Length: 372
Image 1: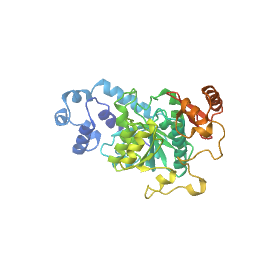
Image 2 (image 1 turned 180 degrees about the horizontal axis):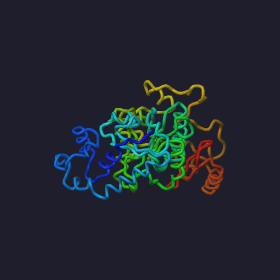
Image 3 (image 1 turned 45 degrees about the horizontal axis):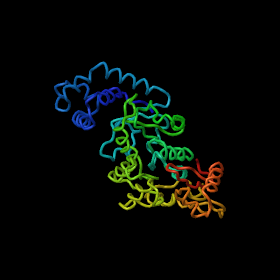
Image 4 (image 1 turned 60 degrees about the vertical axis):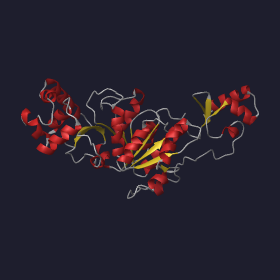
């Protein structure tokens, strides 16, 4: 994709401190393209901008920032997509606050694909991460592009699942596109830049800041036809994304969980308020009216389900664990075993990859093939 010849003007306006989204849209409505805006006399722009912003527009600081952004955009696989570009995602144009431009690294054509957002807890359980990855893979195989926020937990699992299918994945960053946060996801970010797409509305070198992550959530939901929440506490940031999705007219989906798990409460609250309860990939695909599944029926023998359990009859301690988190005392009572016997058996099962330890002295069984 060739960069817009007027890109420097777009950058000058978006990189000037004090020029907010509303002021920028007002000037574009009145004067047209950014090159028409920046060519106006300061007295003409005074109705839209504060004196400090007018002064900053022509500053060396802004000129240097524009130069750095243009240099970045000349790198292989790097793009800056403006509202005037054909590559700008149509889905974001339907939202109330589309960013004036997006920094993008990777397969920029994914911005035009039909997408599904998958979000959830950073402190996810092993079961939650497994659900997110398996569902994302099924959706990607059906032709949907998976959108998430590159956070630990559910987001990372969703990106891995998206990369496993042809739909691939888009990671929306809450930092500058040249910064990976959290650092533990650096390898995943590299894979996404190679086979998917990284995007950010924030200027290069923008460091992690708490107020930027809720702001980027509107892009996660805005890019997608719907938003699936997999594990969320009652005060989870994922619920912000879900509420934004509903406000944007997107479908909202949630996977239910144990009534005893704090990470199920957010999903249960969404379901109570009208989100569609999801037990299988078909529950989502059937709701996305007009979406055509790309070879889904022939390539996917069996859709993942949140209800999947061990197929064989379990023996020993696993037979008493169920699928909810449980502590040693409860297992002693159920199995009629001593604490020493239960602890020894739990250690063996943990080493075998059949059980995982959770905070608070709880244990939970893992399904076969599940990541620990």
